[in-house]
Image (cartoon, rainbow, N blue to C red; front, side, top):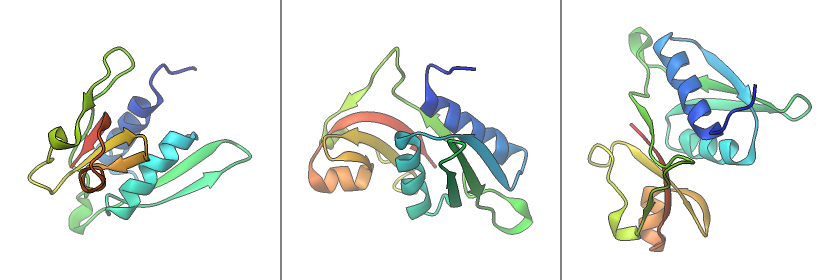
Length: 130
């Protein structure tokens, strides 16, 4: 089945797996998904991810704390294929007063909001995670 918005599909699969308290979730692979997952791993929102290049699949291992509570509380897709949202570096949102993360597609690549503010680059606001 083909999806029109692979980023929204990825976020939805992670959200559903988190709500069902699954250990991991499998999804199709793409360069943009890999870059977003790298940012999530660096910021501690997921435990790890594995890439199977032969099958073009990614397995994402979710991160939990005591009593199987997820580190992730929410994932929102901001810019969609039907409605792009672009921001300047001054307009990049602080998600939950810095506890969350904004992911932006810039001319420097896909980076998190703090890095974009430091580099003084704006771009397309892909999603927010907290």
